Image (cartoon, rainbow, N blue to C red; front, top):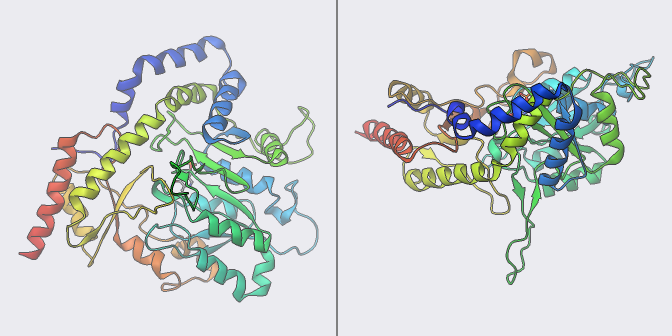
Length: 405
Ligand SMILES: *Cc1c(COP(=O)(O)O)cnc(C)c1O
């Protein structure tokens, strides 16, 4: 049996008439950049998340980059994006080492320096106690740190209560990298016993700004690149809006130097259709995850994903830990049996060659390093059939039974 890690063709087939009509509508409208489709999609995402502003941009990477720029971080820390004269120390931004490269790339690309923090071994997300340690051990470093970017990896939010309390204490901005977590919720810490659970706060709405990616493989994926910034802050929203169109306002007059980073009308129209299905798809992913949990929890040699009680998990990835150095052998076994798996991510960012000059070495962030040796993401998408899932489960069991015999 051939089982892909994910299958975008099945999803398209299930909504083809709606998508085709939406594309046709844009083609006939003659409006291809921003315009009414993008505006409507921005409003719908804002509503979905329960946030004041949503600004469509060209990618998740640009959403992060423009958020940092809107906060005035980088390039000598001038909001205009022009380096001031004189020797201005580069701003620093705390990010987890165990994440997709873009989180670090944008920090560098705005002219700031990433400070890598370790992760919580259970959630794979930024460890607040490690962030606090960075801020308390070195006074000079502390004064340069301007932002924290928690990443909600695999679809489960980071410990935002702790992170926000640290950020307030040290007066640091927070940009949520919610590229993998659109729709994930952070539930109120104390739920009164006589109350049914009130809805939590959505990923991206807790920090100063939140960022989404519509890369095709994300839970809400376009048919090309796309991204979005959300915020409740009027001023930051206005700055992101201006910065995504070369910094011009009014047109052809520039107070700031921006970039060209706009969401296409075609992608917005496609995403508007898909947004109406997102809750159902999330439920389907959660059902797949619960079944994996149930069928795999007793397998010696792996750990199924941890789910924090005060957060919902939208399972962008279903990522297990494979213990005792067996990860690569299990991956190979899956490959031979026609099952697609992936390693997100095989090398933590503090050990990437491009950041060599920052002076990190092996052993500096042990939890991230261990995760990169143990993680394996299994086939996960809403349309995954039960027989297919059973085959994956059966192959894991077969692998470990062979190991012990
Ligand atoms: C996908 C992703 C991004 C970047 O999004 P693009 O749309 O591909 O630019 C950033 N951070 C994380 C954690 C991601 O998964």
